[in-house]
Image 1 (cartoon, rainbow, N blue to C red):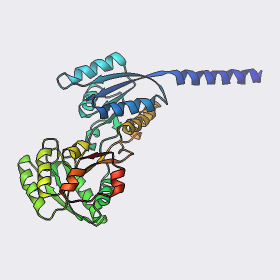
Image 2 (cartoon, rainbow, N blue to C red; image 1 turned 90 degrees about the vertical axis):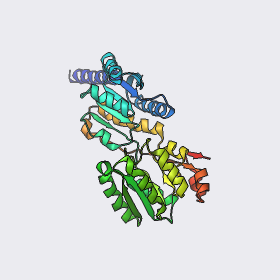
Image 3 (tube, one colour; image 1 turned 180 degrees about the vertical axis):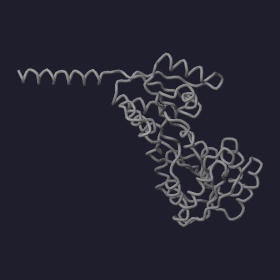
Image 4 (cartoon, rainbow, N blue to C red; image 1 turned 135 degrees about the vertical axis):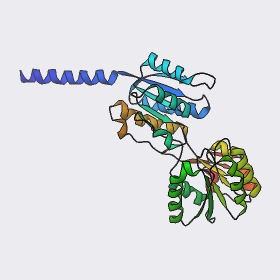
Length: 307
C-alpha cells in the first residue's frame, strides 16, 4: 500500500513538473526600429530565452509618425504578456506608460537614469562603467594624461565626481568643463586648444548628444584632439574610437534577466546591468590625421575599423 501511495505521489509530481514546463508564456517585444542592432538584440533575446521556456512572442515596432501609446496599449490588450522586452528609449517609455504591473526588461538606452523611474523595470543599458572606460583609454593612450570631459552640471555632476576619483587613482589629469546651455558649447570647444590631449564623451543632453555631435566632431578634427565617442556611429562620423556592444549578447543578457522574472524572482532582485561584453570600433583615417599609432593588437580585435 505504501509503495502504491509513493508511486502515485511521484507520478503526480512528474506530471505537475511536465505541465509547468510545457506552459507557454507570452512575451511582447517592443522596438524603436528595425535597424540591424535592434534586430540582433531581439534575435539574441529570443534564442536565449527559448532555451529556457516555451514562449509565444508578439513583436511591434514603434514608428515615429504614429502614436506609440496606442500601439503598445493595443498589443498589451491583445497578447496579455507575462513580460515585455523593450528596445530603445521611446519603446521603453511607451511600455512603462501603459503598465505598472507587467515586468519590463529594456536595452538600447544610453543613460542609466532612464531605468530609475519605476518599480517594474530592469535591463541592460548601453554604457560601460567609468572604470572600464578609463582602462581602455589607457590602452589606446598609454602616454597621454590630460583628459577633458564636457558635461551639464544639472545632469552629470555625480558622474563627474566619480570620474575624478577614478582618474586620480589612474594618475590621469581630468579636466571637467561645465556646459550648462548649448550657447556655452563653443567656449568649451575653444578650450581644446589649451594642451588638452583627449576628449572623452559621456552621454549628456546638453554637451554630448546627436544635436551637438557635428560641432564637437569638427572641433576635435580641427584641433587634433582625439574624441572618444559614444557609439560606432560617432566613430564612423569622426571620433577616434568608441567602446561598443555585442548586440546579440545584449539580447542574451536581457533574456537571462527575463528568465529570472518569469520564474518569479521579484524585479527588485534583478538589478540593472552593464553590458557583459566589451567591443570597440576605430576610425583609422582620424588616427592618420592626428598622427597617432594604433597597436596591431587593438586593430586586430576591433569590431569595426572605419577608413
